[in-house]
Image (cartoon, rainbow, N blue to C red; front, side, top):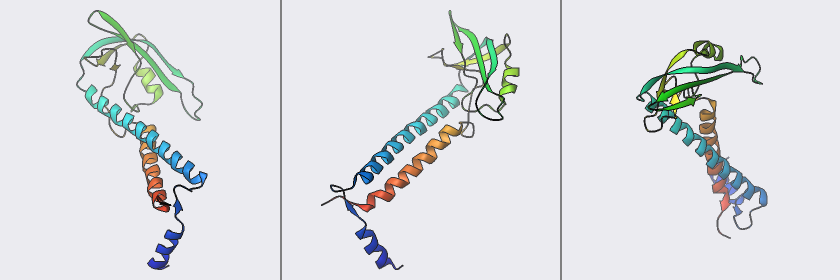
Length: 174
């Protein structure tokens, strides 16, 4: 197909925005919604990554694991999801938290439960201005941020490509 034929085919397939069929308008709406939600998930992932990096400089205190177990999941061939709750004190206040790490843990669920057994003493890293925000293993990386972060980035790129593809096919004047 020559470039002249391509131009004439592209021109003929344009639809006026004012008279656009409902499916095209719905498509634009869905693509816009997907773009916004993907951007929100990606922004949350970036915020979590920045907090993970910031946590490397948080002060530390001693705490105790008050509960450590594996929760059953519906994921096939999964050992379960670790549930670890720990208690720590900052100044006169006592706090409880459940975050072990930011993103995915480098250890398996069973290894985490064995590492943080109920009753064991642990090092707790807490946010100096918000001591209720704590983590047992500070830090994080792009690789450890988990599937949701990567899915949101891919979804954002795919919906942006969809918008870029559909916009030239609409004539914005009658």
